[in-house]
Length: 476
Image (cartoon, rainbow, N blue to C red; front, side, top):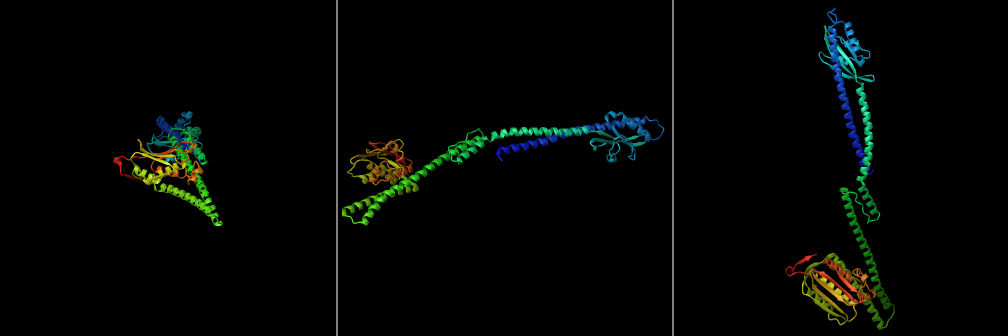
């Protein structure tokens, strides 16, 4: 059952119970009030008849010491006749509680009479056939007689009014319930509208539409829930897009890795097969062995780069205070002297917060890429400058450059702008990917500027350590 239907159902149940009990008590209250009024009137009537009987008895000629039954009948008949317009019914009983006079239709039993005492009034409500009466009884002491006066007052109308009250109230209650159902249906529909929108959004997202958002229908708690749901959906969509990107990147990585393995392995297998299957002269044997060696070194370089990327992701970086000149001296020892390129170093002495081994790897890879992108005799520059936000390293070459549409892709693993040129230098497109991974551990990133035919400038920013902060070590 829908929540809105449950809300309507329980509302109707509560309204029905409330109206039922309140109506029952209200109609009964009116009935009991009317019945008490009728009882009072019946007792007053009994008292008046008693007084009239005693007065009439005193006016009877005194022929006998005791009031005779004939006189009792005569007085009772006169009292009955005097109240015929009111439908008066009465009965007079003697000392033995035997009826001396009874009106036609007075069919009440003797139960009330048996319990009647002297100088007191008794009453009860009785049902005779289809009619209801108030049966009263009182004691009459006159002229040496102890008589009992009983009356019946018809109160059927009070009971009929009660029955009619229940009928009217039931009809009214049914009408109110119908109206309540209609009103509560629209109220419940409005209250559950945000829930229905959330349900639709959930179904849409389950079907794959992660961009679907639920429309906010109110500013209450349900409206806040809609906002929270949309924020959650936004986070899920971003996570899903990120996950899709990572999956696609891994697929691309695996495909590129397989492709990069295929080329050197094909060369190695081909030349090795030629060496083992036929006898070659010395020059061809040396050439084949050189191809095998070159492609083997290329596989070794690619494996080492991949290993470095995996290790940096797992182990993180141990940051410490490092003098800039120690890094530049390491680069000098690695790349100087060099007869094929003009390598210039221009830096400011400072201290930076870094993992020295990892930053050396970054600078070596950037210089290695600069060498591969430059023609023999070109100039390559390494700059180091203190800035307001930190210390910036820049490696600048004047080689072939990179097209603008390729700049966003060159940090991807195995991506190479010029594949033939990179392979000729034993490249596999892993250097910049490794640099980006290392700099991420230092809360930094590569900033690349390039133009085809004009060269490329690659820089990154590291935290500079002031004198008072030197010799600190922080594990990232």
